[in-house]
Image (cartoon, rainbow, N blue to C red; front, side):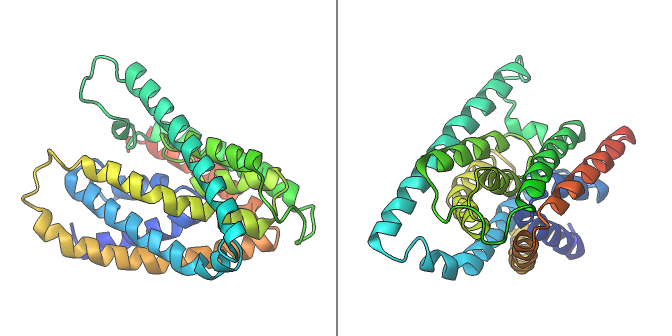
Length: 283
């Protein structure tokens, strides 16, 4: 794979991973347009590194806000830790149940098939993008009618549970944006914009290592002879994904604070049409 393709994929991943438009959908489409195989070991290694780069972008961008809110006192940290554990546990349970159901039904008769085998199917990515777009659009139009300071500054256990549940629904489906869904659900529950944004991305940092580990486990039985050549491009990709991720977070925060969240919903709906047309043309 050329360095140019690695850099392009890193920029797509960094921007789309942290904007509520589904990085996985955009990366899959980009890979297909560049003639790459999303399920190949080299691509899996690259995606692991790109996810790592965007995770560090989230930590750098939100660290100050987390420190001033969730880590401001022992009491605040205990409350945040409980909410994060609750939401993440529900995410894991819901996501794993869905993955098992899909693998036992759609992949019945294919003993070595995994949920990742669906990720390259644009006919599944398109409706997932549309579903995310509708949710973001509804939440965006609702929160656009409230003042910038509107909503609760605190997150209850029930609200965190709903966010975690919805995050679990996103796991098996490329195109169903995790950040788009969790922030939208938080807005629909009248949580303050900055608080739900910070909580959503805190959950993302907690969720990224096990997701990356799951991807990495797929490499156990892969042919690793070409990994030495893929290591340096993958590290370069992680660096570009980190920089693109910082830019994406600034963009997301600005639109969220200015009541333009619904713009992302419009984009997802338009992207779903494009993905469907690409599928119809044989991609």
